[in-house]
Amino acid sequence: MKRIAFLVTGLERGGAETQAAGLARSLRARGWEVSVFAFRAGPLEAELRAAAVPVHVLGPGRLLVHLARLKPAIVHAHLFHANLAARLAGLLCPIPVVVSTVHSAAETSRRSGDIRRRDLLYRVTDSLSDATVFVSSASACRHIGARAVARQRVSVIPNGIDTARFRPDPSLRAGVRAALALEGEFAWLAAGRLMWKKNYPLMLEAMARQPAGVLIIAGDGPDAARLRQLAGPNVRFLGARQDMPALMNACDGFVLSSDVEGLPMVLLEAAASGLPQVATGAGGVPEAVVHERTGLVVPCGDAAALAAAMHRMASMPPAARASMARAAREHAVARFDLAAVTSQWENLYRRLVEAARLEAMEP
Image (cartoon, rainbow, N blue to C red; front, side, top):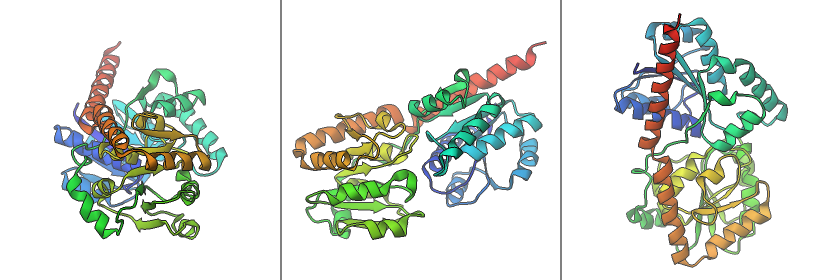
C-alpha cells in the first residue's frame, strides 16, 4: 500500500512543483516508497535524489512502461498535463488509486478560452480520478462551479511548508540588510516567477506611490526585462535566489499582487518567517492571509488599494506590526506545517486504497 508514484509536469522551482517535491520527500521520510516521474527536467531533480527519492524524466509514451513495472498502489499527479496523463494511464494500466491535485484557481495561459477548454477536459476525465484535491477552498469552489469536477470526489488539502526552515531568526537580519545596503529603510519583499499571473506591473505602480521604502524582488521569468523597464528607482531585482529564509528575515513586509493563484507558497513561507503581508485576494490568498490579523488583503487589480495598504502597513507602530508578525507565524504553524499536511495526505491515501480494495472484492 505504501508504494506511490508522483507524476509532475516538470521539475522547475515553481510553487506547485516545489510543493510536490516537498511532499515526496516528507512521505519518503515516513517510510513510503515514493518515485517521481516528470515530463521535464529541472533543479528539483537533484534535491529529490539527495533525499533518496528516485526520479524518472520521460516522455508520456514511456510512462505506462514504468508504471507497469513499478506497480504502485497510488499514482498522485500534480498540475493539468500530469493530471490528464495519470487519468488516462489508469485506463490502460492496473492502478488501484489515481489522485489529481489542482494547484491553481486556473491552470491556464493568458487566453480565457484556454480555461474553458481545460475545464472541459477535467470534466470529461473526472470519473477516471478517485479524488481531485485542491490546495484551497476558493480553487475547489471555482472548479465545482464550472462543472470541471464532481463535488463528491473533491477534497481540499493546503500546501505545506517547513516551518522549522522558515522561521523568525533575528541573527540573519543585520547581515543581509547590510549586503543589500538597506540601511534604515522599510524593505518590502516580493518573490516568485516574473510572469503575467503575478501582475507585477500593478505592484510596481503601487510601489511608485510610496513616499519611502524599497521593494526587493526575488525571482526570474519571461517578464523580467519588461518589468525592469517599468520599475522606479526604489525597486531592486535580485534574480533567482536560494536564500529566501534569510531574505524574509531581512525585510519588513511581504507584498503579492497576483491576479490568479491557488494557495501561494511564498505567502505561507513569509507568514512562517514572521513577515506580515499585503496581498491581492486572488484564489486562496484570503485563506493564507487573515485580513487585519496576519496582514492586509485588497481587491485584485486595484493599484490604489494595494498602495494604500502598503502605506498603512509601513506606517504602523512597530508594536502593532510585530503583533501582526506573531499572528502570521502562529497561523502558518497551525494550518500549513508540512508535517501536519503530510498526515492529511496519508489519511486520504489510506481511505482511497481501502475503498479500492473493498470495491475489488465486490462480486
